[in-house]
Structures are given as C-alpha cells and as structure tokens.
Image 1 (tube, protein in one colour):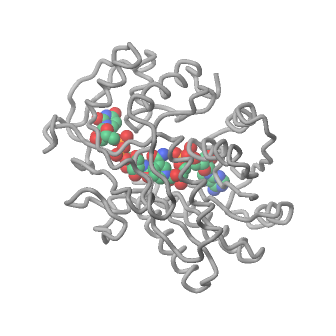
Image 2 (image 1 turned 135 degrees about the vertical axis):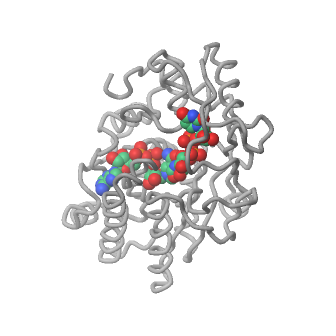
Length: 338
Ligand code: NAD
Ligand code: WQD
C-alpha cells in the first residue's frame, strides 16, 4: 500500500515509517518541519535501506497537497501533523486551533477530491478528560478537555466522525495514544524536543546526560501507591506497529472506530526514574515539587479493543523504553542537530 504520513518526520511518524517499510508498505511523507527536520527521514532511510519520498509542505496548503495526491497513488493516510505542546496551546490557542483544524479540513477535502477514503488519525487519551475511573475505555463519554490542544483532538475526532457518517464508504480509525516514549533500538531515531522538554521521559533523558541538573517530580501526594502521578507509558515502536495494523484494518473495514493504544499498565513517576537508573546505570537527581496544574493522579488504557479489532498489543516493557530512550540520547546528545 502507498500510505501518506502527514507529520511523518516527527517522533511517532518516523517510527511508523520504519514499521510500514518493514511490513512491505510504501510510505510517503509530507511535513513542514515546524517541529522536526529532514534528518529524521534520512535516518529512516538508513534503517530501512529504502528511499522515502518526502515533501516539505504545510498540510493546510491545498495546492501543495493536491500535487502530492496527484503524483502518488495514495491508498491510505495516517494523519500525525499537528502541534502538540499542552502548555503552549494554553498560551497560543488560536495557533493551535488554526493549525490542527486547518490541516485536517484541507486533508479531508483533498482526500475527497482524489477518492482516497481511508484515514488513521493520531488522537490522544487527553480527549477523555479527567475521568474519575480507570482504566479508560473507548465507550466512556469525555468529561471535557482541560486545554486547547486537547480540544483540537476532540474536535478533529468529531470532524472525521462526521465525514465518515456522511460518506459511509470512508474508513476512519481514531487512535487514542497514551504516553509514547522510547526510541528505535538502532539509536538512530527518537524523540528530539526543541528547548526544555515538558514531558517526563525527554526531561529524564536530558538529566541523564547532564544537560539538565535535576528532575522536578510534580507532586508526591496523589492517591497512588507512591504518591506520584501514574500513566500508561507505551514504547513508540509498539505504537508504530499499531499504526500498521490500523492501516490494514482501515483498508478492509469501512466505518469509524475509536481505539486506545496503550499497554493497560500504569507506572508512577518514581517507577520511571528508578527503572531508568537501574537499567542504564546512571543517576537521575530529583526533587519533589508542587503538583503541575491540570495534572491528574492516574490514567491507563483498557487496551482490549485494540487486541480484538486489530490483533495488536504492546510487547515491549518499561525496561526497553528506558534503555532505548537513553541509547538515542547518548548517541545524539544534541538530537538531530548534533
Ligand atoms: P511531533 O511534533 O514529533 O510530530 C508532528 C509532526 O507534524 C512534526 O514533524 C511537525 O513538523 C509536523 N507538523 C505540524 N504541523 C504541520 C503542518 N501544518 N503541516 C505539515 N506538518 C506539520 O509529534 P509526535 O509526538 O510525533 O506526535 C504525532 C501526533 O500524535 C500529533 O498529532 C500529536 O498531537 C499526537 N499525539 C502525540 C502524543 C505524544 O505524547 N507524543 C500523544 C498523543 C497524541
Ligand atoms: C507524565 C507524568 C507529570 C514532567 C501529556 C499530554 C497528553 C499526551 C501525552 C499528547 C505526570 C510527571 C512530568 C516533569 C514530572 N500528549 N512529570 N516532572 O501529562 O501524562 O501527558 O503527554 O496528546 O495529552 O498531556 O505526560 O510526560 O508530561 O507527564 O513529575 O518534569 O510525569 O506530573 O504525572 P502527561 P507528561
């Protein structure tokens, strides 16, 4: 299959590109590099030994997208392109709504024009909102998002549901990711955030190599076993394999499905710190800091629907996630710019 990856130069897109190649598919990338660079695609080419056709363009540029669909016989689209920093979305809501919604609307219009009707979308566990119960199941109604980024994901789910409802031959798979971390085991591709990371694992990775002094653990008074926040961390390679299965599923099944991609296990902040230290033989200095506004005590997925519909489940464990993160960080101390 020819599969267009919007935002395919990014963290999850680049790993998905590798797994699609391994499965015998032909990925094509469009990215404007607002949060990535071409180097990640060159690294994917190194891992796979394949040339990856790629275009530098904004997904909300209808003309550029039209050309890409014209030049490639696209069977299916995986829509990763979007801005994703929660805090930044609170400061710049218009930029987030404009970018994340416009890219989706333009993409759907161009797909319609070219008769492409299969789309897999990068949604997020953030659309569940602060649910009082765990695990999170796909049929739980959202209790509302807590930031503009989350609302863009919520709205895009509704847009795609609406498109599929009006055009029943469309196939829409809404993948709700939990907390993707880790890196490809080659050490060639991984997460390369600009500036000081907001998320836990990239922050720990930078502390591990001495780029940052110490980790602030946001709260140790949550009602969790050790008092720190609990999340469902999933290895990015497992997540990428879930996309391969989702594309296969979309090709065969018209309709609209929401599917969690998580492991079903929750780990605390201190579980992550302790495992990282143990498997990598490195110290992670940390201090307990106040809770981060908007954080919840605990979330993790019910992943049974992914197993039932896609035949997919996570295979890698927390040790793999910590080891692979550290390998990428030590081999690329300055990320892709090094
Ligand atoms: P990323 O920032 O590494 O990748 C997103 C890519 O989209 C980047 O390469 C960026 O340059 C590109 N992009 C953004 N706007 C664009 C535009 N207008 N035109 C073309 N390209 C554009 O992020 P990621 O972690 O790989 O996330 C991929 C997707 O998954 C995002 O939609 C994100 O919201 C979603 N998601 C991520 C997480 C996570 O924790 N990483 C969790 C849930 C959902
Ligand atoms: C994890 C845990 C923090 C940093 C975010 C988005 C979500 C999704 C995934 C896109 C929490 C604690 C963190 C630090 C810490 N992204 N922490 N010190 O908040 O679960 O989810 O990324 O869709 O939408 O909200 O991930 O990695 O920021 O935090 O103690 O320096 O680590 O309090 O308990 P989060 P995270």
